[in-house]
Image 1: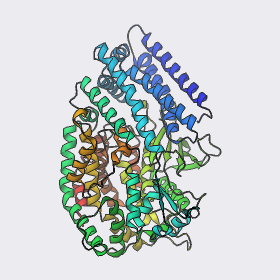
Image 2: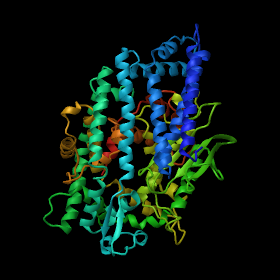
Image 3: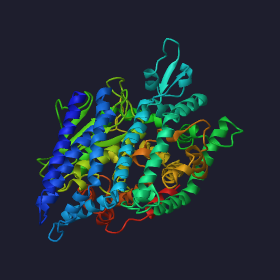
Image 4: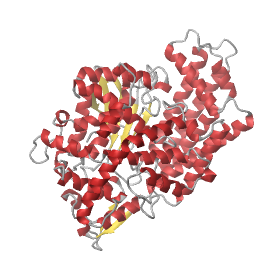
Length: 639
């Protein structure tokens, strides 16, 4: 799967481009009577060549350990994206596809043709030649700018040097991993395995503030200019395509359909979360006032710490108390066991796979005797690797042509480096969430047409299956299958899980309100003319309006907010999907989370179809009614 040299990767990429060009020539050479066989099929083969090369290069640019190969992968992505943009503006190709008679086509083929023609029009294929030329220039520039933005985030790892006593409050295994250097100082980085426990447990407020400032200053100031350039490119693209803003353009083919609908949705979430958020912050402030009697507010860098104090002291739950139950290997194996049971599949480890790093674990996925695809788990941090958690497609499945293949990229404690490698429960939830995307990619990867394969539904539905799968990480019956104490081997007590869940419910109002802030920033930056936008001031104003936590002077979190590139105006999709996820979950809660009949019906109605039908119809098939807002609101308001 992975080339060993940059020149090999580039040669493979250019071979794929040559294949695509050959298929285009074949398609355009048809003289009359265009059909599925002589027009749609070669176009689909063209798409396959570009997709396979592009997915591979996109992954390697984020995770490969060798910088020259990462750089070659970025070049490959640029070349593939440039040709894909050229195709999307190719008038002759569009006219050839539009000449195919849709009468008599199978329903999924007709949908494929309709979506393809829609996407050509959205790209600007019907514009005049100067406009199409400019749109291509802008699309190519957008790719390069996005790579610059992401690379700056990936490579800018900050460090604070602290006295050993400033680690007071952190778990023993964390402190054991962070010993003083020759100067007597301990180095804590902004990588997740360092950052997340420190902001939750470290008693030294000044140390937490220092690390927070460093983390929310990553990629600044360079990425401020890059982001402004990205906004200018997108605004011009939207204008040339006849749209009022990039927000309107990018939401047009989503469930939301417009930036106005998104704004109304966020206003509704802001309204229902205002009361719960206020209650959460008042409780945090009361706890802080035990330490600082004169305190009048809780800072953004204090929220995780004081949430943990409230959970310990008022809700009788210490998150460190559950860490011994979540040893990394057991959690990973337990996740495979649970998803195997739920979805009627099994995993077979692949020996010596041709992956990009020795620490990648790979499995073939079977349903009965049928191999459905392959997954790769790259779950531990290393230098210059993607810093967050995400599922990356490698191959999108097409029935009878190629099996789906995907990678899970995370940054959890590595048992080969530190033993035992204990996870916070938040890490467990993250792993379940991202694995949900991987399941969607594989189970939905048996489509006739590439454009409907796997996680190919509307983007504002994409997160819902993963957000719902998080629930299994909170279920006592599920957890007892793998969560065993590292010393006693006793399963995690149900009573402890119930307290853990109760504690987790605290803070959901404030968290939701803060997510509204992120989503509003994403939407607002892409709804206004860039010339009129001061990015820092916009961030400050929106944080003041929506977030329960005030701005911290000197920070510029937008510079490392990678979703502003990848999601552009669509960070709202997390909240939109969560509304759906809470409604979907109700069906499982009625029958039991491990009920295999419900899980099978969910698999077959929601995951297996991929993007072959509209998300609203998939949801309706499973719920036997349209989805609603009520379950989300009830969850949010429940005390």
